[in-house]
Length: 295
Image (cartoon, rainbow, N blue to C red):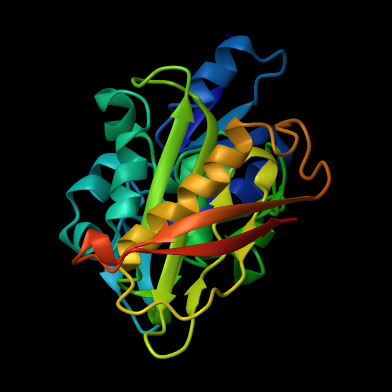
């Protein structure tokens, strides 16, 4: 590892000033769990590392007028311990729990995990399924975009020079929305995912069941479930788990190409029979056909 200068930002505004000052020669350090590994093996070492880990204005978890705001510097451990997140989005807690070891979760940040842009990231799919937005701060001010647009390609995001990811927002209309997360790896502990999948849904008890677009992290595919016929007293958690299992099984069983090297390798369709349960009497379960189209 070659020598570099280390500067510490007091807050997000100071961080932006430092990035503007040092330009392309600077890299951001948040938790460091990815950057330090990269520095050891990379042929090019940045001249300046901007440490933003002390920027308190990027560490909050709060309900705002927009929804649930999670600062980019919130660690995975803080996500697991947050009463707000545990109560509203246990799927986010499940995803955070699968990230590395305790030490990695204590240091690694949500924003850092998203900015890496790797298809195997654990935090992305659940946020995608919940239609999360990201707030990007830069010299021209702040701009907001859907998380799906933030990911441009594997290991590439929409961040421009001298910009940083400041905040992740789950929209107010999705607060408390049932969701489920599953990780498929070669082993249970400290494994990079072969496939991460998440699904989230609301239930319309009088008409149809609508499943929000589940998110599969390999190659950034998103799945959209077409409404089924009416299902009385459908258990929402059962439905979200089913959607996750269908998409994950499609990856596992080779229904379409698993390719983490490209953003999109083509189109595929998965049709599977579903057993919907009313959650109270297993004998009352009915066979339904759920059609999930992946594009």
